[in-house]
Length: 466
Image (cartoon, rainbow, N blue to C red):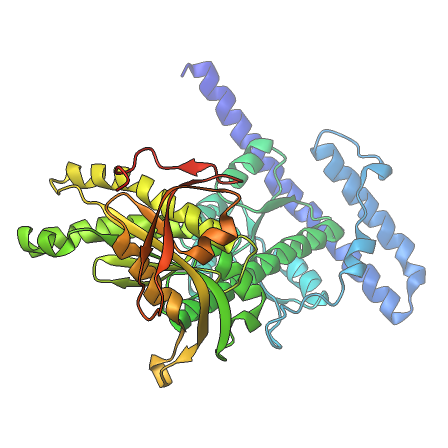
């Protein structure tokens, strides 16, 4: 940096400090004249107001000259109506606690002026004279908003802002910067470091109050959104615990919006059950180390569960090396059966990716068979006390496993009722009769190769039909 540039920089810094030193007492004249004028009105001595108005106008013209411009009256923004409309909003809504505001300003007169104006609006106001004290109070006490001057002794307002943001975000603690400087660089730097807004000195108090109320309103909205998010998570946790199963996020939202859907009273519901079982699981468990077998099952069953969730199904259980899923619970949909069959096909397709994942860690490839059965289940709360769970019981869960036993690795088989529900969009290539658990007569099962309609999914290869 040349000597000339250094001199220019020092001169600019000196002018900035001088402007600050002069503007501060003049702005106090403006502020105190406004306060005195309000007190005259309260005492019925309005006849003295014109003299105070002259004092205030003269101080304002001096401030305009310090800024290097003369402001026209129409350039001043009036927000008195907005402030009046917002009156009575100082309460935070949290019981009877009033909104708490911390004013950090090095000038005692400015602190008093701002504090008096904000207290008149119903806020609980405290002050701090420097950056160190301001930061201490920010870190050790709860505030709804901080009005923070940039030029502070011991620690600058920008440094206080930066350190405060390490613990609390913009939405958690609104911070409005106050400065008697007009340099936009200060305002930009403050916003970049995490300020929510800024105001300039001398304070235009209707504007300051409007900015304060605006940030407090945004702060309240952020708290409400956070509270709703926590409430939704609590409810989702309850639903998952009550059902003892994995539920898709979309269904969780729907159940949260319709709490009656989690009624634990028993009822019969049409449901499509799906069972996907790893073929040769016993032989694998004997040929692999326990840790390797555990990793293999976790990879396979975890990946299959993600596919079930994608098709809005509910994982009812992991039974050994098998996955059991339901479509139609907890909330029935018109396309439950179609989604169940499409999911069964998608599970077989997913095995290619899952086997590739296992190969990368030195684990063997595996195959699954999938069986689908549609029928009625009884759903309700079973068990007692902490063991109470929302579960489905009935023949679809048992017979879907019987259908799956017919399937070889890579195959999907469906029961007659499932086929009847999706006959117009499912592609089958072979049939087989099988006596399912608990049935008096054999059922005609069909091997599904794909699903049309909105799904358009099909197996890339299947074992040759017998």
